[in-house]
View 1 (tube, rainbow, N blue to C red):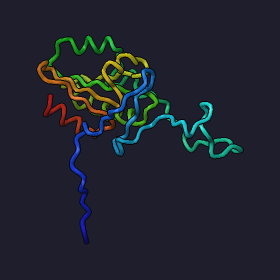
View 2: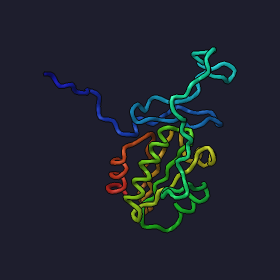
View 3: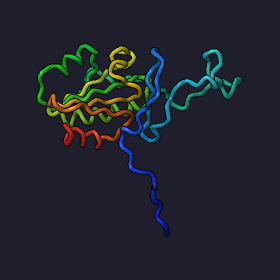
View 4: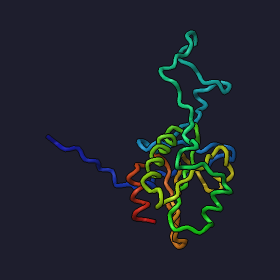
Amino acid sequence: MALLHSHAPHRSIATFLPFATFAPNSKPLCFSFANPSVTHHRCPLFTTNDTPLSLSTTLPRRLLCKPPQGKHVKEDYLVKKLSAQEVQELVRGERNVPIIIDFYATWCGPCILMAQELEMLAVEYESNAIIVKVDTDDEYEFARDMQVRGLPTLFFISPDPSKEAIRTEGLIPIQMMRDIIDKEM
């Protein structure tokens, strides 16, 4: 029995960062960890007059399940949604724990999955890290200034000002987040 081996070189998360330029009013792309090169955006080939084409024009569309509401930020969650000004004050302030900033959008599927993992991480690191969220639709200028091009985007900011922030794009495993907090901060 032959074992299958991948001959592709090991790639860091940095190799999956998009290098394309975007129009000033375009939304960030939404990435999935399973295939980071796949983006979710409107394609002009499949739309006519901003109305998506339907495979069936005679039958009404039936939903197999209720669509998600995109409400993955609630009052009782540990990960709180902050404004751009609140995040800037938090980063500039004195602290002895790292800050994790999650740039997300309510329409982004991988962002919702990441929100669940960040909540678990917030429970684990309750007194050892500060985890906050920024909605890129509400804080578009701030996301643009932070060069957020894909969603979700995480910034890991060390309490040591001499260390650079670590940035990831796309859905990453919770163990990778733990490793960054424990070993790199």
